[in-house]
Length: 107
Image 1 (cartoon, rainbow, N blue to C red):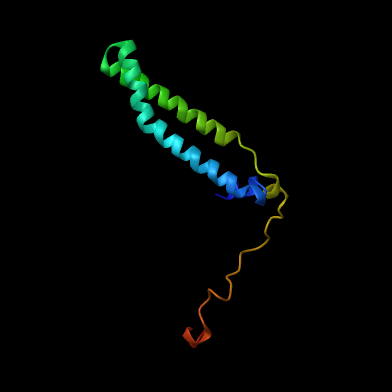
Image 2 (cartoon, helix red, strand yellow):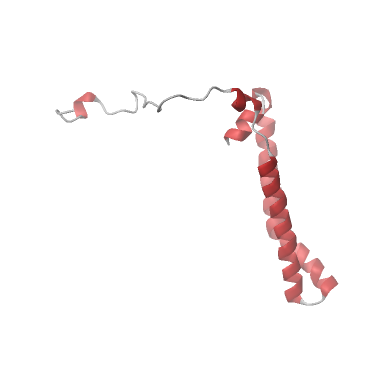
């Protein structure tokens, strides 16, 4: 999520989220109905059902590898690269900490 937010300017956040949702839906269709469509195409070409399913799995594996390679090749957004690294541990905010009245008397 952070990558999506930092890779686009604020004025393009809505369009970026819309394209993310559209890509997710297309990916879900390809991984379900698309797989069945691919296997049915191989059944007509190859002839046997088991080899059609094998080649269908091979095609789906290649599609997964394409997505994995794309994710690994993505560069860090400029905004994130320019940010200063934090020094020291993060502090808890006062709003989240326990009130003094609820603490034990020895602390």
